[in-house]
Image (cartoon, rainbow, N blue to C red):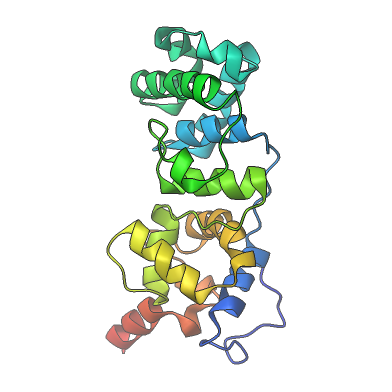
Length: 221
């Protein structure tokens, strides 16, 4: 959790790096899996899926298919039961097999390490690509999902309509060393404190720097 030495009175609300660092330190998210292919496929499975369901599906899948080569020769229907817990299994199975085949044939079995190449793969957008770049290759990359987009706007750090706009705006505000960690930490922050509905503002030490909290506080007055 946020160090108790920090209080709303000594947080510099204009220092976005300090605010972001507080979130990262308070809600750390560790990545046990760093293999590029497993991270890539796991992130595809995670789309519109709860973490616990993604973990089950990933475990099932990689228990049977341990390499890109093995998965590239599978049929989508072979994956259905394995990845069913993650939801949208028909569509995800097709994309996963296609991704494996493309990596095997076009990239010599090696996951590419650039946004441009990763986003050429079926079902891979900027969020997925950026997660792979940071987690697997250690490249500064800022993945913006619904949590990052919503919280950044709620806090008043950015004023954007689309995740791609949020990514570019945050890159201008934050130290590149924070780009990678902020995604996972904002996910945890969004689940535990800054919830989409009924956020726990009274328990958030960033509330004195939050545009949303300032607005609702005035309404209460």
